[in-house]
Length: 402
Length: 234
Image (tube, rainbow over all chains, first blue to last red; front, side, top):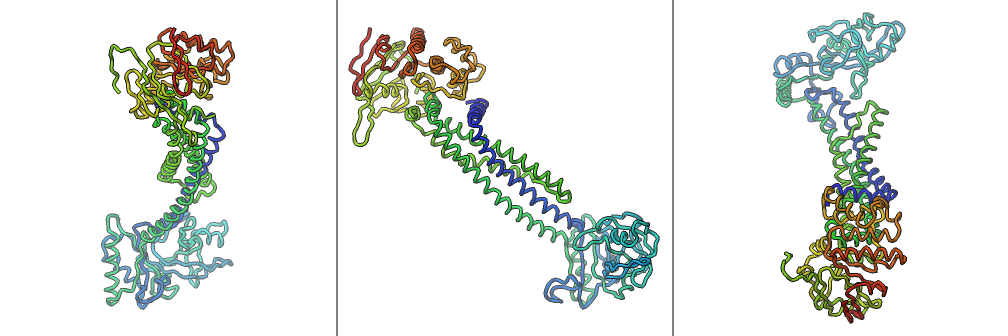
């Protein structure tokens, strides 16, 4: 039989039983739409979470004082260690380690920020110009911290958007003198947006030069040091050098921790991917149910059309052709249903992106392809049994069925 | 299943054909050692009481049913050893069926019903369409080509079924009570069509209860209890 004839013949059969065909189609469409939509949601969630961490970049290393071995318990996040990381350490690392593009020391504390009669308790970050580059902090107005020598204190500051609005309202802030604890700093810039997430909203933070922060909080210790590795340099090699030098400087004891955000991101990625697969696995059950429905429909079709099968055999259709016709019928239904399902799923995902523009809902091609493949495969596998039954009918018996 | 071309014009030969059905413990010999030779172009009627084996004989000749024993040759092809796929091919190429209840497919138009054997055989539309048109014209159905079976009269339906049966130019046309569901006028029309085809050379075998119809055939076979009891030629 010619392909076009097969399709026409099958199409006429399906058209004859519109309601039945439509219901089968709907069940398959729902199954596929579920897979497509849920994959889209899962991928969206994954993309969103990864996006939250992406500012860290894959070429960044973060060092903080202390180590699990020296302090015990959880990996130190607060940074308590016998020996601090100092600006001198930072300077040496910057000079000695090959492959470092940026080094940004960080001192973090809380200080009372006030302007005229308004005052706020706010996160105060002592750092350098490099921090703005590593974290890609965008400026709304003015300039970021200038490229000063690390040890040089200067009474200047950059403030976040929220803090600016709270203290200044709509009036301009650049050039004004802000009181940070017991010091006065001139505002030279405004950062844009949230700055970054990662548990900290930098839009109500104050950035001051690192040396200024050290004297403000009366400490030598750095809270963190951020490193950006040059392109084409191995992160692992830079990591080894950094640890080696810190060990030498700290009397042979390794008491700092280096974190690679890319490792962290890939852990999150694995977790969320596993979650997506689990959801899709559950959604696939509906495809299985649709497959069983197709089997039943095919069975009904075979039973109702026994006489027709008898006739087709009488006028020369071999068993293989009868089987093929019923399989085509089932898989055509499944395929049309599946394509409809993909369209519905994509429409839902699209609606999702409209409702939550922040979350990158998107169904990956592998999900669409496998949903189509599973739909096609289940329909064929499940329809095989009834189709084979039709093929094996004796023409004489089939013709005489009333 | 190569065809042996020879002088021998015989086209159908049944020898010692037996077909037994079992109703519970009881064996029913629907065909009991039947021997029959049918030459090219014959017009045969098969008559007999219900249960005499007429339809079983027709099914055996039509390769719809397998005899329990005996040999059946069609155009010198021995059929007892053929596989089902090969039997289907012979049905397609050499045998045309006309049933009492037409067996048209309701969702297909008259033209599509007639074209069905060629569609199944994978004949290209460029060859198929002229053949179907020719058959439609021959049976006076040209203006009914796009009607569905339920829009046609009984006589027209049976003519569509005849069209489907002759599309592949079969060697033999097997008609099982072709007028059984028709009024006398339509029945007469259908018989006329079948006899015309026979005059054009096709072998015609009609199974019927209708004595008047049976008498029209040049060769009349009477069956009783699975045996041929009369075989009269005019």
